[in-house]
Length: 219
Image (cartoon, rainbow, N blue to C red):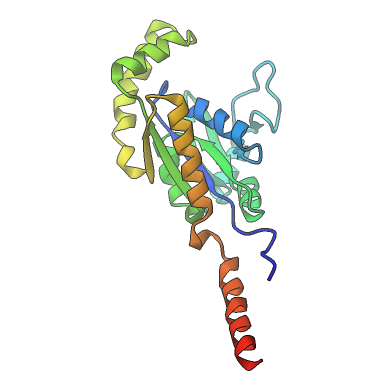
C-alpha cells in the first residue's frame, strides 16, 4: 500500500529568546540544515529601509490597512514597537502549513501567546532558548558590536522579563554550545514531524492494513 506523498500538516515553529541568546542564529542554522523551512514574513507600518525588499524582508503596509487586517482576523499576532506596528499575516502561513511546509517564527513571548491562541494553535511548536549565564548574555551582546552601550543596557534590563516566560513554551534549550543546541533543535523538529496527531493520513492507512488482514483470512 503506497504511503501518501503529503504525510502531514506543516509546523509553526516558534523560536524565542532574550536578545543575544541565539534564536536568530539558530533559525539560520535550521534553514541551512533543511532548506524547505521558510520564515514567516512580517507586515509592518514602518517605511522600508535601504536594501529591504517587499515580500522578502517585510510586507510594507499603511496603518489603515494594518488596522483592517486586525479587525478582520487576518493577523496571527501583532504588536506596536517604537510607534510602528508589526504582525504576522495569517493567509501565507496557513497556505504553507496546509501544504505540509514548516514555517519559522522569530518572535517574543507576547507574539507566542497570541499565536498559541490563534487559528493555527494545533500546529504550533514553541521553543525558548536560554543563555548559559547572564554574564555570557551580556558578553555576546557586546561582542557582536551592533549596539551602543545604552542600547545593550536596555536589552539586558528587558531580558529578565523575557526569561521569566520560559515555562510557557513546549521546549526549553540552554544555548551553551551552538552546535549542541542546533542538534537538539533538529531532534525536536524530527520528533514533532513524526507525531501521530500531525499525520492525519495514518487513519486511512491503518484501515487499509486491516483490510489486508481480512483479505488474507478470506483467501
